[in-house]
Length: 463
Image (cartoon, rainbow, N blue to C red; front, side):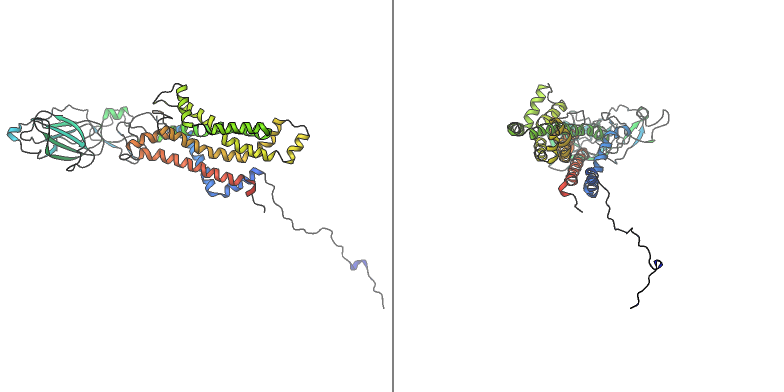
């Protein structure tokens, strides 16, 4: 066998470096991972944007929409959004003497044959004329916003004319740009109505004098003459029954509602954190005694204490009770947070890093503030988020029944209380504050649900 000869050149050096497949994942903190999980929850993210929008509406809105929420626009009372704002320029109001006729000469039996307008009907005045009725001792004039029918009420009685020869009437009572139905009924000598009546639908035109237009900043002096058209002030959400701008009142009402809805939960959640963490860390009989006191507070009736606080602060019926409401919420709503925090503290204090800190000489306040409470922040934030809509709804309910914020101070609850009185004829006065309450409560609830899923470590992905 021949031995093969090898040369060094026959070999190639082998590199020591090898390509190794590396799977790298960026390190994420607890809050970064929670934010990623929250963004993946579309409902919670939309709710977060809605909450930010509501806060912007509350804080920045009054800076952009600088309308006084107490200012009255008497030319646009209870106007819905998008209503016609046009007005015709007319001359100053001129008194009207009316008309008379001899009923025994030109009268007819039963009801007036015809009701007519003495001149075009405007928001200044509606002037009616009618034919006299034989044997009538007078007339009664009605106004309605619905057509008059047999067997139904004819509407609002405007006047009772006790002269059979007086066959005219001038209406100047809270006239709006709409259609009214006027009815005239003859009266017998003892004041009883004849069975027949005559009605007339009247379409009222909105008018304004040139001087009024100048005073309200709608035109410059001397720029208008009778017959010209002007546009009244814009009210995007309409006006209420006193002619106040609903958008401005919703903005200022949001400040009251969100102030109570955010400040009160922050205060009673903070009180619950301190109480629950102390009870959970100390444990034993102290823990049991503190939790029995929390159970006692839960049993106290909120509405009764609200009434007692109003009496103690000297707040009478019809006056705003913002401070008693805030105090009642803070003093009676903390036990739920205290129970949650206590349960978390009882669990955390058994962890090894707590024992290590104690061996190193850490003080009690340091353990609670540095280790325990920060590790319960997820539960605390979720609790706070769910407490906000509850406080907002409580404020709205108390204001609605007249025990919270009272007019003229606007809040969403008090605005609902005012709007329910005109719900059938002007529903926008109730719909807008009710929608804002509903959206706010729903947004905070969905946000709290998303935060609970994002901050719960047991629901985090293990991939």
